[in-house]
Length: 363
Image 1 (cartoon, rainbow, N blue to C red):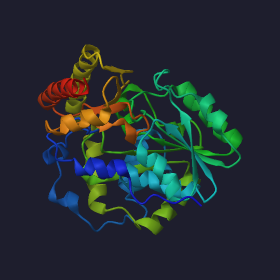
Image 2 (cartoon, rainbow, N blue to C red; image 1 turned 90 degrees about the vertical axis):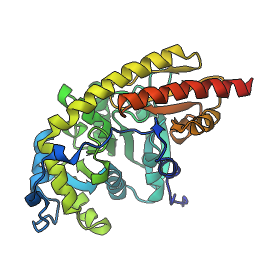
Image 3 (cartoon, rainbow, N blue to C red; image 1 turned 180 degrees about the vertical axis):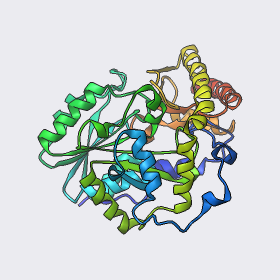
Image 4 (cartoon, one colour; image 1 turned 45 degrees about the vertical axis):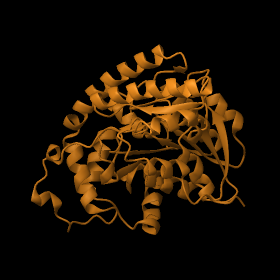
């Protein structure tokens, strides 16, 4: 039996460096002012029934994604949502097939439940495109869960709808489920990119208010699944947290009521910052990437210099990027560009200095 992990090295590393001033390792946007939610004292009432998730919030989420409240399971952020899905579908001896490169906790969670972990590639040469054939090639009779992200974390690439449909058909034919972490797909909701849950009952998707809206502290996440699966997940919540914090549910409902206003300013900032980082990567001979389709992160390949050496140079400049070793590609780093533009510009300037210093030391 596999030894289960008892920590996430990446999350521990990110928490340890949370106070860095020019934190280009950050993957979300700054929190909005509380006034943007327009909450009154009555909005903080804590006495309503929310045993299986506060129904007004479940209904609001369902309406946004074109499902019913019976499809919605509330969770303490997308992290707990992903945990619940793995807990439901995986038993010792099962196989979870996880994308590579990918977000470290999605790879570690199956091992926590003593499942065996295999991987399918989203290759750099193919621009991290999601290829259903690579999944099919790695399937076995023990495969119970395929795990992927859309937008892809760390590259920010969008999965083609045709690829998702093909994976859904494959899941139905070969009897497995697909967990899709869609926290970054929120950036494309108003551009017609809908949840994979609508494509097949074999898809179970997770989201939160963290990445696109800056509400990480609310820990407001949810799962979308077909109603029988959603009901099983709600019963599983009883084992882990019993129910979600009602104050968080109420804050989340207010966020949904003002979602257009909450997304307006960050969208403009992220668009401006993406232009800056595209120009930056193009100007540095050591760097290359496939630009993200949307979202707040991209995955940059570094040549001629060690990423770990670069990170040490950046730390000396109160700046940070996320080392690619946490995502499965040690010669790359993930850069986040959701912060305020003046902060991001200064972070890029310091990154340029650190690149020069790391290269000079190698010489």
